[in-house]
Length: 280
Image (cartoon, rainbow, N blue to C red; front, side):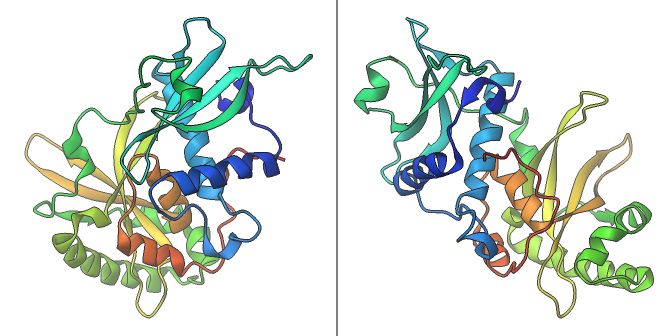
């Protein structure tokens, strides 16, 4: 069950006020894209908050107060002084409301609004079993599954100005070479991404890395799987995503580094694929 099925979060303007308080409370980072900072100033934060709640629900880590009147979650964020930040929800008393909870707001771990109802801090969301899966190993070979990358994602290339498959193939080779050099010097450039296959129910960690096409801003990210066989181990680039979607997906697990922040600052328009829960 998703957050909007369970929680009344309020109208968009009301929710944004709470996000503004969270942005001021938490350690500094980018919470929207430059192209929409005036119209949707907390797009990344909203996506992060909604999907973190959903994951915590899956893991049964939402904490219920003793009197069952309040619910809390660990946002995974810290204050500027490294205190945990929690979200607090109260029983929804609105007549006729389908949602059981009302979103109260964000609080520090020692705020009275939280400690008066809870004696412990709820656990953080977790997306992985092996921490080594989060880190790109530059000793392994990176291969490209070009047929799938190009043929199955041609519209994504076209959307960012590349509509010649032969040229795309050449650019992919150039981008791969540049990416490998960068990853040897900064493994954090490959961001971890939690992938859940709705058909097989398989969960796994993939990596997302920027594609540096010649003389062009970074618009696409390469999705990378680690492949293990009886005789070898290597990485395989299997598909691509718009960098905005890659950034939002990876932010659920880690805060992207400075290189990604620079890439995102150059994004002057947003992909139509940014599908997240909407608040009117």
